[in-house]
Length: 330
Image: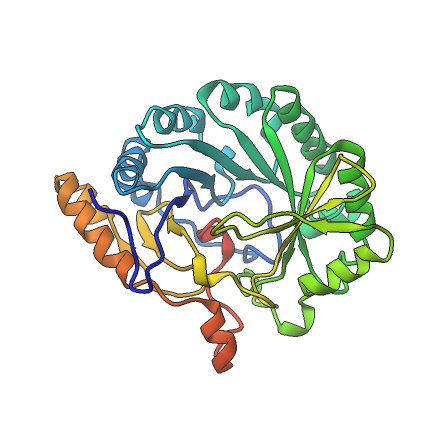
């Protein structure tokens, strides 16, 4: 089959696949206090999810990241990992997780074919972290999950969403964690996907600000940027251990070579996370449509991909809220 190309010539190579919208945390920049879950019979089965991946792989998608909600609250997700790993053309499967259940699942996930995990850890201070995620007594479980993932050979990264006045005083602490352990720490600009709709531009700590602050203590050097990457990575000149990543979704978007497509847990294809456009695959999947028909629908939907958040910023049309992040998975 032909490659998956949008009207601006961008080619999809990576899939963000949400396996559930449910989560055991209540991070205020992700989920509303009283979320409305997708009915269980509307969530795609593992067989349906694997079929979507197989069709996308036939069009050149080679890297899959499983997301949620929290993917590890869906029972048997390691079976999905194994199924996806067997699909021709899939080169890598990773997962974004809050880490709470990671200690229990790390070995099974690695054996199934998972290659890496990115753990959301927005503070290194236990009380602050638990206030952010809205659940008490979970910090140590997340730390144990990170250790377990490393023990079984999974590549581990940490995501930290930086919010002004919340955790922006911990940048050096995260940098030292990276230097001490070798774990990549990614700082992410606060985006308008918060469940409580509290986002505003004044609360965004720009990637350039983060780099400037870190540079007062460390000599950092930029690493080559992979085509389509959401992250610019920096190493420490005085150490071969550790790495900092900056995700500048708001201040310096990377729309021009975006190579991602997203599928929500209920089967809706989302070409661009900053657009509200969604295209429902479920009716085709559940009506017996052949792969060729589904493929044509996907190509049509992806061809309509929005230019990106750059356009919204230039026109001053960036909304205060797009959708709760837990429904999309990032």
